[in-house]
Structure formats: C-alpha cells, structure tokens
Image (cartoon, rainbow, N blue to C red; front, side):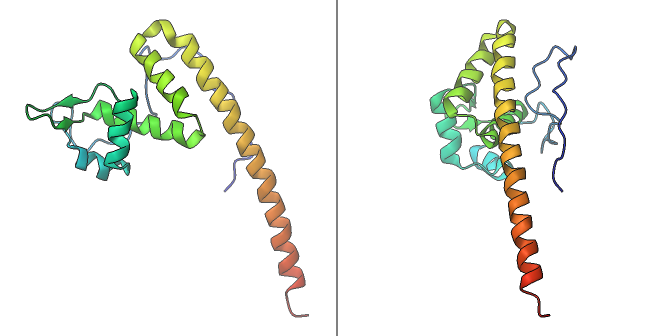
Length: 154
C-alpha cells in the first residue's frame, strides 16, 4: 500500500503534555514497577547497548536513573522517549537536531514554538522524500510491467 495523500498536521488545541510518541506502545511493566536494565531496553527497543550509552553521552538521554551500584535503570517514560527518538531517526533528522530538540524539551514550555518549527521542517523533508519514493516506485512499476510483457512467451 502506498500513501497517496497527506493532510496537514493538526495544529489546533491539544493536551498540554508534550507527548513523545503517539500512540504509545504498551509498556512491559506498569508505572511504578518500571525499572529496566540496559539489556531489557535493548530487547524491547531493538537499539544496541552502545547506542543507548551514546545517546546518554551526547545529551539525547541525560535523565537515565542509576541504581545504588551505578547500573542504568530505564523507566516507561524513557522507553517512550526512545520510541520518539527512533522515529526522528527514521525521518532522517540529523543527530545534532535531535539533541537540540532534547535540549529544548528540557528547557520547558517556552520552547514550544521552536520545537514546532523544527518538527514542521522535518515533516516537510519527510513529505519531499515520500514524493521522491513515489516517483521511484512509479519508475520501478513501469520497468516491471515492461519485463512482464516483453519477457513472457508469446
């Protein structure tokens, strides 16, 4: 299935909370019992432990709790953030922009306009890439059709 149309993002009134991913995935554990080791997060997210540590080091995940022995303990909120970050990566957003976005989130509501502008810019880039992929798909379909017609025994 291909996407033939897109609609503008809804910019109307929304809930005041900054939702990191919609709809959020079901968490493995309920809030309050959500202390995951890095190994568990690797399994749940598909990211590598190296990537998780790197995200923390560059400021993309600076709020990861630690146990009394220094081991990382991730929460459901962290899993939601990682889900959102993974989606940003899929858009092709540069890591520097992702880090800038994370910094703005930490700065609070005063950065809503800048965050919106960054996401709108990323959305335009995604729509452009989708259009390029549609054109590419049309060329492939033409070639496949040609070979199906010409390669068939007569």
